[in-house]
Amino acid sequence: MAKSLVNEKALRAAYQLLKVTTFKDVKLPTASRVTFRAAKLKKYHALYEWPEHVMTVNVDTEALSDMLKIVAHEMIHIALEHNAKCDHDHHDENFIEMANQVCRDLKWDGGVL
Image (cartoon, rainbow, N blue to C red; front, top):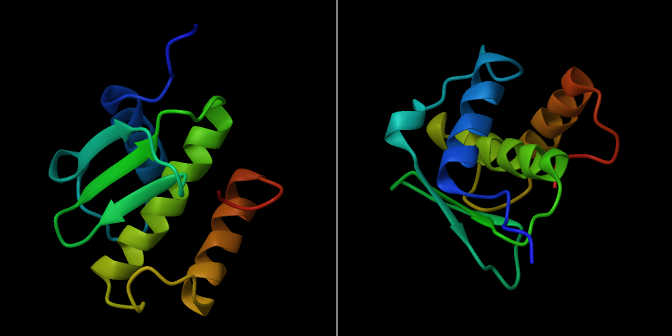
């Protein structure tokens, strides 16, 4: 059985890559302030715990492109929480607007996971 590509080091690298590209103008905590975890999740692709700055991504994620989309999704939550523009955990109009922009920037079809 192949080892999961999702691990703390890969998640940190994905966060840092996205932070210096599509999220470069967005106020986000540095990667050193975020705790990255890989775990088996039954219901979600990922979870973000606020205000502790803990991002947990499902180890069952099989494609690198999916991992990047999942990290981007959680980064949108982080950005909105950090800038007090959302009602914790909801995919409101602010979330959808930012997700659509990220998808346009990165040429992703189908949205962030």
